[in-house]
Length: 166
View (cartoon, rainbow, N blue to C red):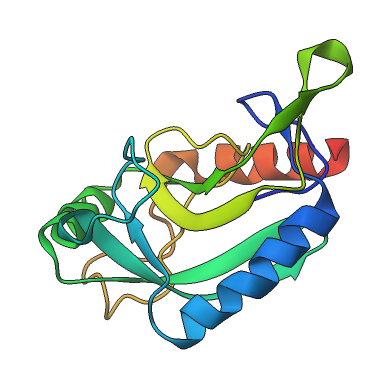
C-alpha cells in the first residue's frame, strides 16, 4: 500500500487515513485474525474457505506499508505456494470500504470513512510495484528470494523509478 500517490485504480490514499487504519489493523495481527484471500472477492467479508494467508506484521517505510505474511496450509494457501514455487510473480492489494471524492485529473481521494479489511494476493496489484518476495525458503521449499527469476532486475528498476516519482 502506498500513501499519497495515485494507484492503478485512480485512487489516492491520504497518509493520515492509512496510518489510522494500519494502527487499527495491528489488533487483528496480534489476535492472529489478519487473514487474506487469494484474489479479491466481491464481498467485504473474509470468507474462511478462501483464506490463503495471515498477515504477521505491517510497518511503514516512508509512504509505503510493507508487511510479512504467513502462507497457510489451506486449499487457497496451497495454490498460492504452488504459484510461487512455479516462479509466478504475485501482487498484494488492500481490500477496504469507504467513499471517494473526485480530485483533479480524474483521481479519486479516499475519504475519512475508509475502513481497511486486509490484503489479498492478486495477479495485478493496484499499487505500483506491490509484489510478494518470499523471504523464508523453509516455508516454500525450492523458492529463494529470486522468485521473479529473469524479471528481478526489471522489478527492482520499476520499484526504484516508482519511489523516485513518489
